[in-house]
Image 1: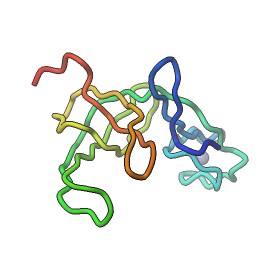
Image 2: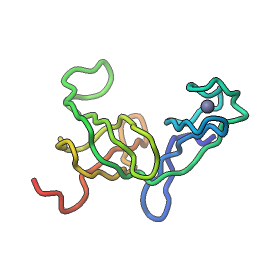
Image 3: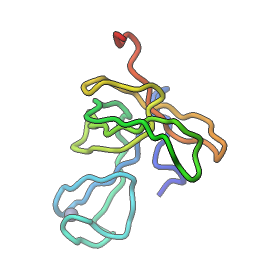
Image 4: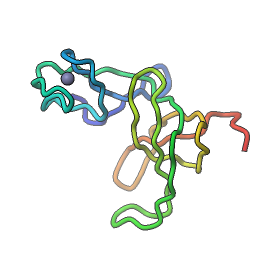
Length: 123
Ligand SMILES: [Zn+2]
């Protein structure tokens, strides 16, 4: 298991997702405790690298948070190449249906992943 649930790949960022060999369930971030869907042991789980690109299905602006500076935007993103929806920070308020791409960014607590709108998104 990697230290962060993403890695650089082909000049972009890939998410480290997990797949269950027993039932095919996909999840993020990766873990080796057991399948949350069918209950298979951690031995049945395997990590998989998937491109950090997807489509926004919902987004909100967070105005209060006990740790992170506000405001910031969090979105539900349907990952392109995997049957997976993740929640992640987006650096500009997207519309539902906008295409986004993940990038590694520096923060006060170290590197983290944040999503940007695809270049050419009409605003
Ligand atoms: Zn399973």
